[in-house]
Length: 80
Image (cartoon, rainbow, N blue to C red; front, side, top):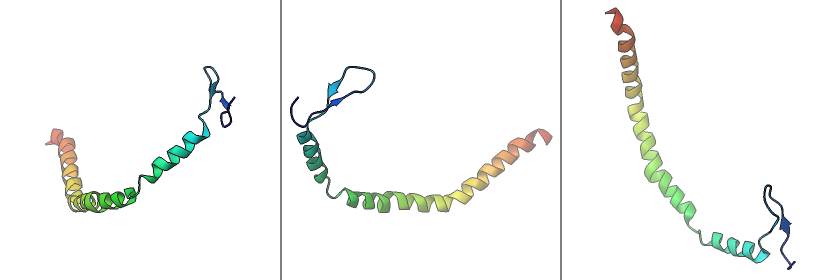
């Protein structure tokens, strides 16, 4: 068995060799190419989530009031 490989048993199925260590180091390099992703998260929050939150805070009470009126109408309709 070459250096850096170990046998891994995942049930059910045959025993398969584990990926060599160099593959793990290569994956670590691919993560470094993700520089700037945190900046995109901030842009997403500021440009998308906050305006949606403002709209919900503005329209929320009206939507709740209209839903209450609709339910009250549906419940009281047979008695009118």
